[in-house]
Length: 402
Image (cartoon, rainbow, N blue to C red; front, side, top):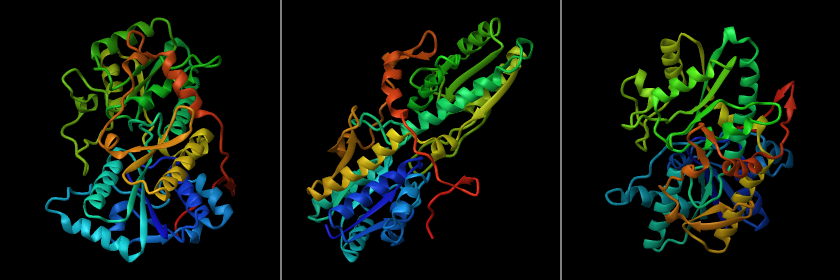
């Protein structure tokens, strides 16, 4: 391979830049001349908005700093590549650019929708006898990509969620039962509850854990929810409940929609969700008279690089390196995957794109609204180890584009 290009797409994570570091490292080991970074994903690619990663990562200090930098160093996008039919000029433009810069392989770090981009481009290349190769690098804190045992970004988000919930539980239990507060914590997860399930990891010998966990894999029953709080208030001085942003009623209506009207959708048709915790906190306050507090982790759970899991960082680096190895072997239309022992492999993108992996129902304790041992055994290894941040003037420092 003479030159390659790598980009990032979708919601960033605290370790997505480690995947870029992995791509760069392996490419240079294999003697690749230029490693370009597309700024703002495929959207920036179409505008030839590139940087030469040698300008940043040939310096070992910057390479280490990139691993500790959250969000998307190259910039991200939520651009939906159109279907080929009727949009041939878009695809012709993409391959004109690839030829212009003598790029032999295209790498894209992202989730479900990003893997759809890899699928469409690799299919077009095969059908039109193009030599360029297209390989996906897994990324998503939602952990909902199929085939891969887990996704880079998920372990670090789990570590942040478990740590933050332990701190919230400590804070919420500071007062006597007469001042009981119901704290509802909203965690990302539209259709898959992997992140909210991670709230179970905060339970240990010095923390009683959250009182209930509600995932979108199961219909939400408002009456059951209120009855559970009524029972808990009789014996507890603190109630902390974790909910996925995408929990929904039996009729499919999102809980957050109980207090608002229509919601905007993004380029992929995803309805924008937020306000689930505040909606439920208002209902609890109205129905029970109890003091309530709503906390929404929002972007914090995907940007907290100071709490990155070292296991997660290594998975991200290794998946980036594996993607380059795959292209060097002539593989096209594949994604790097991580096995349960954190070894890496590749898999056909057609079995991955547009497929959503949910939390197995057998891992959910529906009666007690908790996670079973099977989930804990799965998730605990993903949060092990730390990559300490680099501090400057008392705060963490990051690598940013010029």
